[in-house]
Each structure stands twice: as C-alpha cells, then as structure tokens.
Length: 195
Image (cartoon, rainbow, N blue to C red; front, side, top):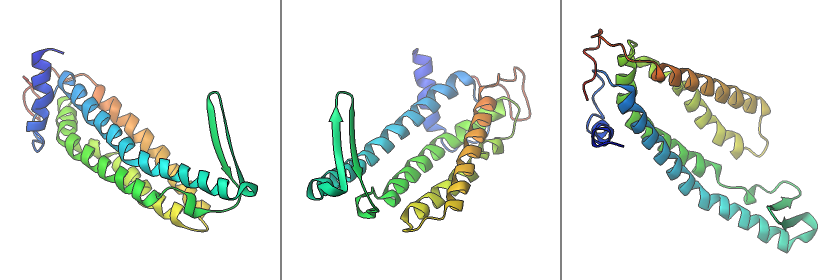
C-alpha cells in the first residue's frame, strides 16, 4: 500500500461527517474493508466468551446427567448433545444480538459518509446506501425475541429468514453500485475526487 493510499484510507476517518462530494473506488474499498474487518473481529471477540460459557454449561450438565446427553470427541470433531429442552444452557442471545447491533451500528456510522460519497461518484444519490438497513434492523429486533420465547412462533422465524434473505440481496445490490466506475467528469455532486 502506498503512502497516498494510506493517507486516503485515514482521510475517511477525518471525513466521517462529510456526506457531500465524491470518493473514488481506490480510496473507498480499503477503508470499507478495514471497517468491516474490525467490526467482524470485535463481534467475534465479544460473543466468543458467551458461546464458550454455553458449551461449558452443556458439558457440566451432561457430566451431572449422563442419561440426558453425551459428549463425543475425536480427531477433527467435538460435539455435546443434550436431550430435552434446557434454555438455561443456551447462550444469552439478547446479549449477543446487543453486541452485534452495537458493532453493526458503529460500522454504519463509520461507513455512512464514505458510502454516500462513493455513490455520488457514480452519479447516484446517497440514499441508495440505506437499502439494506430496514431488513437488518428488523432481524436484529426480532431475533432476540424469537430466541427468548419458551415457545417460539415459527412464523416469526419465517419472517426473520425472509428479512435476512432480502438483506443479503439488498447488500449485494449496494455492493454492485459501490463497485461501479467513477463518472470521469464533474456531475451534480461535484468534481471527481482528487484525493
């Protein structure tokens, strides 16, 4: 990565609130990759302890109640099977979805202006960047409710599944728009980005 690219990468942090103007692909994608990569690492690091604690609770339960489960391990695999309904053994989905929502919100804040400028560079309004948001917000709100229920409503599961599928389609559409070439001449959003 050249010094110019590094400067451009960190220039996005200085322009977090600048929704006007344009941004080239060459400066947008390294920044987007950094923000998304850090968000994923933070989500994994924050949720991994809860997942590990859940596995440990299951192992303890099976050791105390060998007639209600089993632990199997061998080269390349490990599984804990628990029979029956034991919600106390499950990870705290509200906590995990809360952490995920905070990391996602932080990524959205860090990417919002850059996405808007990148869309401007292709001649499109920045509002196109909001295309995936309703679907992920719906799923983020509904999923903890679904997992917290002692008798989950599987019609809600269908809605969450549909929302997630639509989110992925909207995200793919947005990624295609963000990958489109810059308009070489000045457009309604200003002259080409000179960074």
